[in-house]
Length: 292
Image (cartoon, rainbow, N blue to C red; front, side):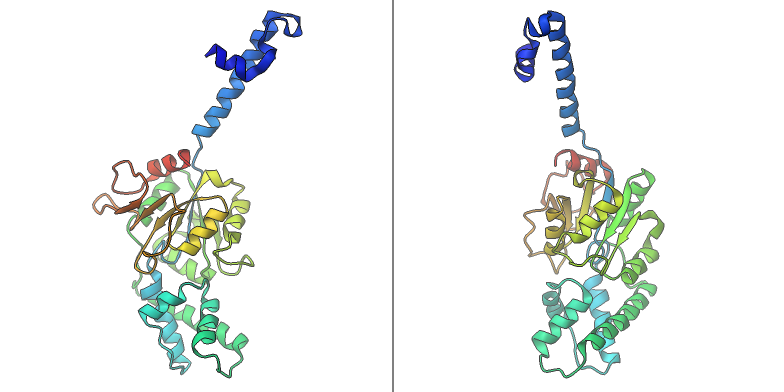
């Protein structure tokens, strides 16, 4: 051990430095304290915040929520457009509802003679109204483990945030129905940043607002685009996949699960070490941060 310390502190610990052996021992002690402090910082990272995507992560909103709402908005506008489950899976490659409509028109109705800058926002607003109605009827439920983990984090003083490409109205509608918006320190949604996922802008925005570093936070996502955004922001990510995303590339994720799990409904692990547990809790979240 002493040889290791001497190597670390260099010649300052040798006899004759500053003319006294006492100074050499004191120098060794100072550097040993610094080394142990650095070591402790590396192995004792502390979890400060959980950051959640919304659609597909908090709830499986896409197939049975947004898709249905889009179709109802189209019908209401007397448009003969129907987004099937398979087509919607294709459209989910585009982040953002308004962007998704524009992409669909470019691909499937390129000759449409309409003012798209007027039509698209109106359709999207009508779709939002239908989506909120579906939520009010209780048609969209949280995924397993989501409420349990968020409540545990809130009770233990772990800070909470939202980072989503969904509109603020849609994000709030889901949170108000099943959780409590006041639990979330930051709700970053929609067009609050110029570039949507897979760009890291939304996560950089949340980190800046919360004044936290990436190694203090754990992200929950469900898609490759979301994972790319969080990874490029330096964040560690837990993926809970579903039917629309189960074939995507999640090699950059720390953990890949089918859901967060409950004591009576264990998750299935596709990637990561869950310490023989069947559900993700704060203890496991902290271990992921330490091992990052």
